[in-house]
Length: 166
Ligand SMILES: CC(C)(COP(=O)(O)OP(=O)(O)OC[C@H]1O[C@@H](n2cnc3c(N)ncnc32)[C@H](O)[C@@H]1OP(=O)(O)O)[C@@H](O)C(=O)NCCC(=O)NCCS
Image (cartoon, rainbow, N blue to C red):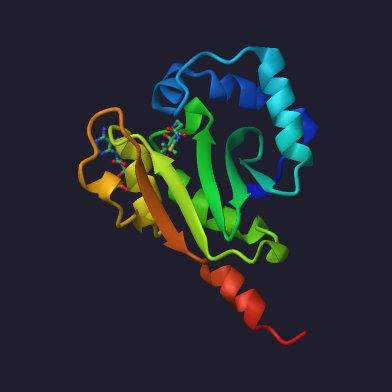
């Protein structure tokens, strides 16, 4: 796999993956997304300094997308794979490699993911990528339909970059 930042030409791929029924069912907003709404959303995120969108590709196809959204010293992480590449265990490596695209000036302390408790594949993927359940009361009594939060402290790759002399 290789990786790069998302570009405008990725708009239709993301649109198809985002409206895949499994993706919608596991999202915080389960409603189908209209193309115009997606277009507005995508272009806004692409041009925002508080968002980083990473694409994974193999030689011929796009494999998926990871997005980091800055919130103070934390970043919210989401992942959506091309449905053709799900179930092959590629998500965890993608999450870890994507961390190198996080800008230094975010001064990141924490990564966090909000996951539906029934999304077992996602929970395992985030655990495999080094995330742990947040120690919060809502995590201890998560019922079906609630959200669980998984966190990871500032990734090694960023700590190493910070430790380098100027
Ligand atoms: C969620 C997602 C990122 C997972 O990535 P993936 O690489 O396809 O993950 P896999 O399906 O290979 O599963 C990862 C692990 O979960 C396990 N798993 C998957 N479904 C499972 C299930 N229903 N019950 C138990 N284990 C399950 C796999 O066996 C694998 O285990 P392993 O790490 O021990 O080998 C990907 O399926 C996706 O993009 N889904 C749609 C969007 C989405 O849900 N995003 C996350 C929102 S928070």
